[in-house]
Length: 123
Image 1 (cartoon, rainbow, N blue to C red):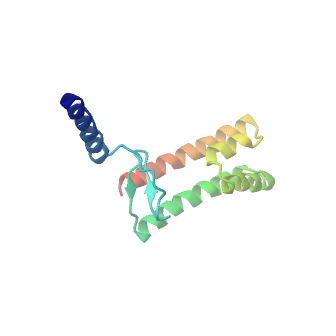
Image 2: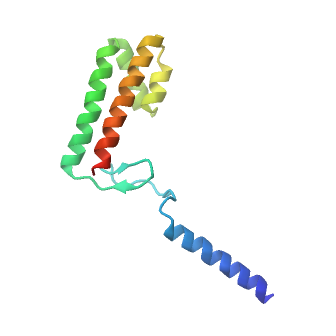
Image 3: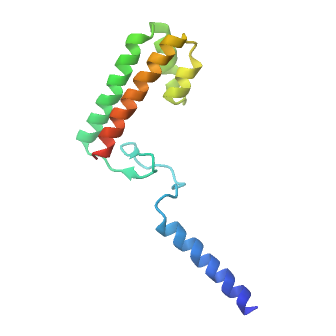
């Protein structure tokens, strides 16, 4: 009986320690601030107004480049899909684009993702 309780207590202690020690666990609570950015390892970074501006500039540049490639109706549909909750990649896949246009848009997205990664690595 005592060994059973000791095993249970040991297991409970391990679970509690692993939750507090391991930084890779995802927080199940919703984000409190919209000004935070979540990186690939689910670490939340507090941003200064200058850093937010830099990230916004990268996003605006990406959107401008994509807007140059798509016609007006495709661009409106893309924006509607993104605002509807789809990620940018999901929205691009849902648009009926030619292979050449789709590849060009995906290349632009990858380029700006690399720019964003370089920017956030400096934060």
